[in-house]
Length: 463
Image 1 (cartoon, rainbow, N blue to C red):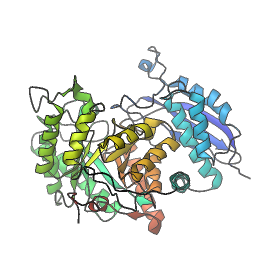
Image 2 (tube, rainbow, N blue to C red):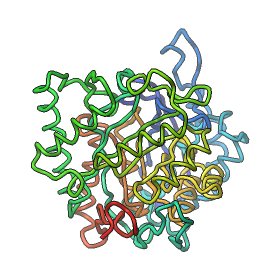
Image 3 (cartoon, helix red, strand yellow):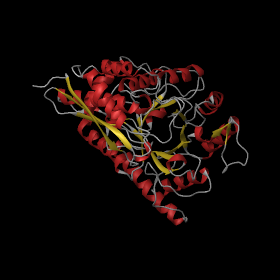
């Protein structure tokens, strides 16, 4: 006979998609199979993120080992959780936060804490005999209560569709086509050049379009004398191009080569990751200007590209400390495109609340390992929806075969998922899980696709 009482907590050192050590945690409830979770790791990390615990022993794995974090799970964390009810996710996460006792989870390690938090959710699913997506839905329902989707002040897009957060939804994928920045050797300043299949009517159709555009992009790159085979950390192509704008033009060409219409069928997103070229209050973009750009010049540049190309999403267009720049771009572009805070918000309720009060951005990237527990992740997602911000559930550049975020994005009805490209199995693990969920959930999970943007007067895709 099974129960949801935690009987065993165990961890081990495993490896992520970059061959970098990470933490895997198993939690077992009485009479049930263990629930298992693996922790991803980012290359482009914000200063305000929760802190991974690394061994820093240069004689082993260049100091990147996680045996200290693993030991913390097997000793201190295990002692605190054995005997507790795995069904009470909020209490488990509260205990973990209290046990660590630091603002960024640096004592026990955010990797140790997150692995445990997620493994508890999986263990609860095993004990209850339900699928992970059903268990995540139960946890989300206990957290969310009521999502108001209230309109927000002028300058934001606001008024996200009322369906977001209210029911299970298959997500609109935001998929990496060309990689730059820290994901591909900095041959381009911007980090990701992405597509969003806004015209597709189902998740499976959206994914088919993505695959076709990706394949056509490889051909376009090769035909134009660029590298059309080698890929970056997240599976996007990593060609050596002259400028960021050239990358945008190549993606547009690939969309057309796939027989699709740029804009109405497939739109473009940019992950600018501008914190990484922000120095002394200026943006250093040698491919654009020999002199560093002011915040206003950076906004002018992005405004021009949004006008010229079918761009509907900009992630971290300004740096994490450039609040004035964020305010300016929100006023200029907030009614036209999605402005995602990643380094700016780091999935942190306090940071997002500050952004709301300052009137900046209209979307937040949701990464579980930026904050370190499932409960805190869901609290940030709820705050976003309550204030008319689009949530975008996201993977990290150092990923694992764990498909957790596919279950999470469907269970919460967040509406969008950013995983990476379609050429690496740690990415396909998530995309394939969504295909399974589309089939198994049938009428229980809808697909809004690009309609999540059309509800907003003034949006490029309003209807």
